[in-house]
Image 1 (cartoon, rainbow, N blue to C red):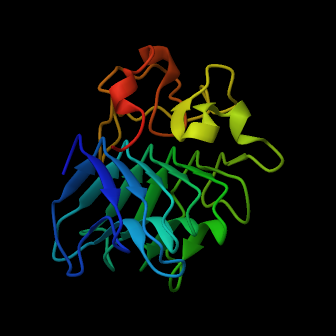
Image 2 (image 1 turned 135 degrees about the horizontal axis):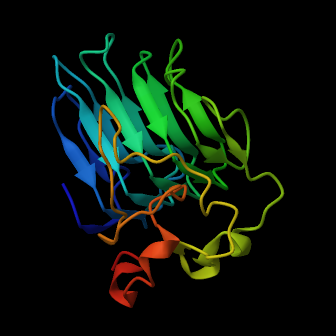
Length: 219
């Protein structure tokens, strides 16, 4: 699933309730517009068999339970990879499970239950890196705390749900470069624009230029 703008009034956005392998979810904006206040995830995918699932360059907001839930397998044969996603105003920002959920360059901001969550056991892998969050423990190394930072200082128009990165944001250049990553060689952002070294954290790369208005929010 790629390049979609999803406006969901059902509890879940883009989800798989059974284990799947070799699935890619990228470059999507997923918004919740329903009335449920307790359950519902924007993107949810579980690894199965011997394949890796990829979730990257997505913007997800407004879901009561979690923005993005990437469940890995129980061995390195089945990773749940989440790179350069933006999760804002959800329950949890990101959730991982079973130890092989690998998170890099993700942004979790103003999520009411916490920025990152391990559903069971170790959940999110220790090799995760360069993730940013505004509350709770941020997994992995080279983390970026957004505690006390306002949304207007991070995003182009936070009040109107434009979560593309502001050029003066602390997210700019705070990520790790993924062009040679062994699991996912990522070189572009949500708008298809090239990323530059070092990468920005989140779905948008500021150096790529100004995104078109039609790509700002879900319809």
